Image (cartoon, rainbow, N blue to C red):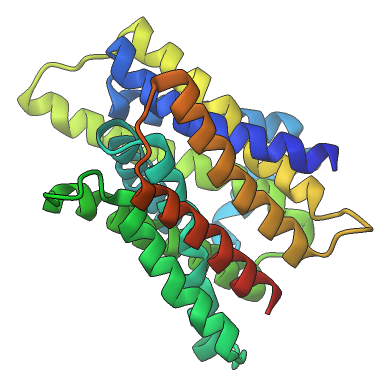
Length: 286
């Protein structure tokens, strides 16, 4: 249970860090790119095997790391914007509800079956993203809804891609190497974006942005690392681990948003969070 608790805490801290970027004037793109470089370095540091660099491009999953790297850059920027403009709780709900996308993918790709309760869970998840995003009972801002919806879709694509690559191409002993290279690819793509931007505008690489990236990269890596460790638990199956992890992250990040940033949570928002919890349980357990 210790690893699961640590994964929940590190995952929740990510949303808080995004919010702090706004408060301290950290430029999100630069910090996110630095974050992936840091996460990649941590991954290689903890990787115990030895792989010749010349053999890495020959791995069947190698090009998939670039696709995932691009998705990581895009979705992390969307998550940051959602946390800053809509709220920490909304960003966490939209991210965690995305688990319904790989579930639906599994139906078509792996002939997995969906019972009526899982279908109900998917419908409730979509409702959860909507109600958790609504900040006013009288007016609904289209941009406010668009951000969490994009986070929902993007996070689901990441989970689906990871599941597919893991099922088809990646050997278990290569998980650590694969993860490090995904983070490294995201960092490389981000650096390329910065260089292209630098052609038209001056670059804004400074100590504040780099420190922000380090502060983000550490919990980003360990949220995944400790989740993988938690999945080795002998007393909890993977469905239980994922359910506890996702539900707890939604609730902890919501509480952190209220306590640290005085975020207002309306009855509709609480209803969305409740729907989120119910939908995760239905999708994971049934």
